[in-house]
Length: 206
Image (cartoon, rainbow, N blue to C red; front, side, top):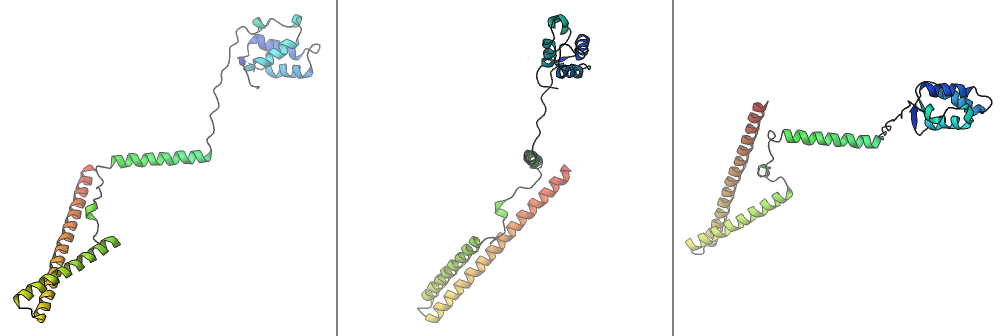
């Protein structure tokens, strides 16, 4: 069916088209075939009906107003556009991202939050270098303090001064080791507490 205005095929229109399909005197073979193809029930293009009607002499055709009496316009909706594969893949990915955001929003109160303070000690080269410089500085400071203390106590005795520096260095190392153990223990306690709290919260929610 050709594009353009479409109307319903009424009995007068079908009778007219049937009669026109057998009019050998005024219509060409093409127009007779057109009239025959349009004479079936349903809808017909107005332009085609008007073409057949115009080709007939006025004495052999009904008035156009009477011919179209009782007929109505037929409106068809536009065909849905076909989505290409790339667009379908993008829409699918966007839908998956939206679902992930919705899921994260739903479980945000259940999932334990990451705590930057609970990171493993010396997890990077920067931390290792910083700790090494810190230890070297403390060792040097402990040695100087011990050396100066024993020098004041033992009247500038080189052997005792050196022994005092070594003793100060050892004391500082022991103190730093003790502090490191305490910090590591506190981090483990905080991490275990957070894990236990998450498990309890998750069990209550389920």
